[in-house]
Amino acid sequence: MGKLEKKVAVITGAASGIGRATAIRFAGEGAAVVIADLNREGAEAAVRDCKENGGSAVFQLTDVSSEENIKSAVDRAVKEFGRLDVMYNNAGLGGAVGPLEKTTAENWDRSFSILLRAVFLGIKHAVPEMRKTGGGSIISTASIAGLRGAPGLHAYCAAKAGVISLTRSASIELAKEKIRVNCICPGLIATPLTYNRIPGGEQTATQLFAAFQPWPRAGRPEDIAAMALFLASDDSEFVSGQAMVVDGAVTSGMGAGNLARGSQDAPPQMLEDGWSGPSFEMKRPS
Image (tube, rainbow, N blue to C red; front, side, top):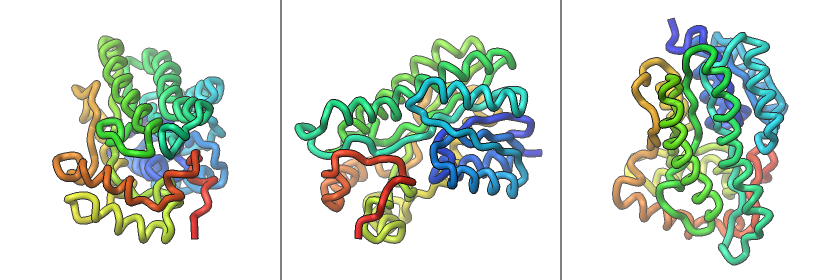
């Protein structure tokens, strides 16, 4: 019997990267999953992967900047599978990138609408359904960038710090209803969101990431999926309000400096474009 047998999960941004790896892992542990994403092609492939891994899954077209869309993803879970046990607010992008003085207010606001406001909305609309079943687990993807600053990523760092703070405040309010609220702070994870902006793509990114941290390999989406599984399962019943760092020790000491150095040494196009959109819309530089 799987760790998520008979549980129902909504995962935003599940068409690729961390979200997709988590959806597949959840399905393999017995969960029914709503793949909530804008990337139709990737999401439909993720649904197939989930089913091949032994679980149930459906695709729900979701723009996380829309409150109506997030509510519809939750409603789809209830309509399709009868309940909601796990809400994973994972969708993200780089957002406003580049020097602070060149960051537009419009790009700043767009960043926060997806990286922080969407997390608030995911929590807001998950709670009523979880209350009906006596509890649940809300997970959000934060980042080590919410714990340590990085040049050129001001909006991203600030928004991810907000996810961590919101996780803590929500966990206090919802504990009495047995709704756990936690977030995950990934380190340098090789996903399309990170490597699609790097010349050389995934191969180059994995080499760069491994060099910036003590652990001798780059992080993988499956590393974060494993933590998400723990937080979604009953194994974490007494864990709430936590920012779970999964980073190969990069923030433990010298790694914090390496993170800043890595941002400074990044290819110029990564931090000067002004906006870094969803991974499926990116074109890799030559």
